[in-house]
Length: 188
Image (cartoon, rainbow, N blue to C red):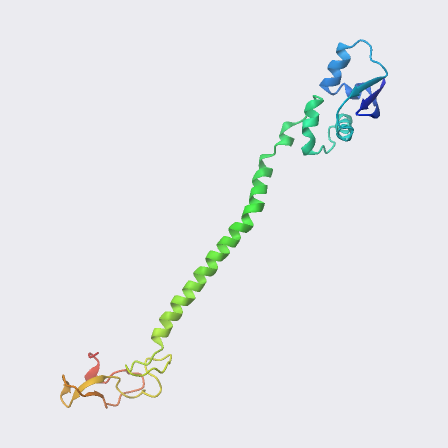
């Protein structure tokens, strides 16, 4: 049996058995012995198109934002489709992972900068010539200018270091791999 359904001025010609899939219409038909040509309902006709499509085929991809309309017409639907717990988790991950990655990248970048800075400071202290008054930078313990000479610069006497006001450089010759001569290895 075909029924004219007037929803806010828009008329739908629908089958009674399809409408009875909704508890609202099933109860209405059960309560009323006779139905006029037309049933009037003051709801959104645009949304009723989705409701009727869902009543025709429950596999219809019903828009989630309109599930309240199914509630109004008392249409049974799978509530798990309305609330998907994994969707909220995925949404949270999609929004938060880029921030987390950016934060981690910032931390990693800062760690690398700190490591480079600390290593540079260490290398800078290692690349100065061992002669106390020399400011020449080199990767070896002694710069090329002082290589082969003892780096001791202090109070020298013929008998070894003494306390006096004359600071002098040791004149002993050494190999290129040494810093101090044999006399001054334990002096500093």
